[in-house]
Length: 352
Image (tube, rainbow, N blue to C red; front, top):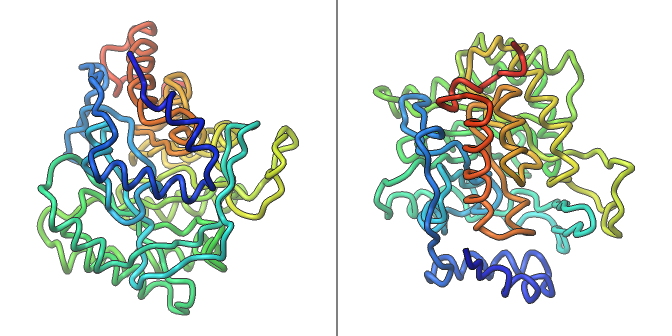
């Protein structure tokens, strides 16, 4: 199958990565990115949270921060798209440069700092589109907000009616103090308020609420998150966000830049955290596995470790949007080769 990204990629990589990303979003909005022949298989279909997913491969938050390319990315074959992170007020984020390709390592470092157009702009775009496909919204806090809970509550009240699921992002390393909200007491207080807000605005058929966690957690922190998740009754976890660790294996000249590392070096540590969270929650809530996914084998490893769904983003930078078709096709092949008749049978298989 011809992939036009092969022609465009050398030119895109000549550009600053943030400029390149902006041009890609514009191209998607203008319909300049060809729509592929999508691969789908009955093996990949499942019902999660009462929603029908044609396949388990989603677009992670960060690519479409401002809900500008939802339908074009769904048309590329993603099973779902997550937009954001979105903060109540628009903010510019951190100073540039703040996005770095690590081409030698198939990795990316970002210190963007929740740059986005704000809740109202994102809400207006969500309201303007036909509600086709599964779309999640990732909520963050403004950098200068002292009362973090109020920001998440505001995001929930405005966007819950427009989302198929919502994510509380307390794991980005690029907003000062944010990761501290993963500790037991502040996390419990945050989730209780946000769940109450969800009930106020969507008393019937409320969208699932998920928590996105960091890969750089200690054993006690992971145990606390699992307990709070089960006690509060949230609907799922996303494991994981980017890491502040820098593996010795990194070779690229950008490897020591400050920010969150994503891509191939994150695959093993994020999958390990996913495995542990599935065990700590006894498989009682769905998990989304994200971090380093670039192949069907990577996605399959996440599913066997306990993921119900998977997401990727960094691999788009190096392989283009056609990568989603490759992942789905190879994943279906791996499921069939192991004798599974549906993806749901493979979830958590490595725990048995």
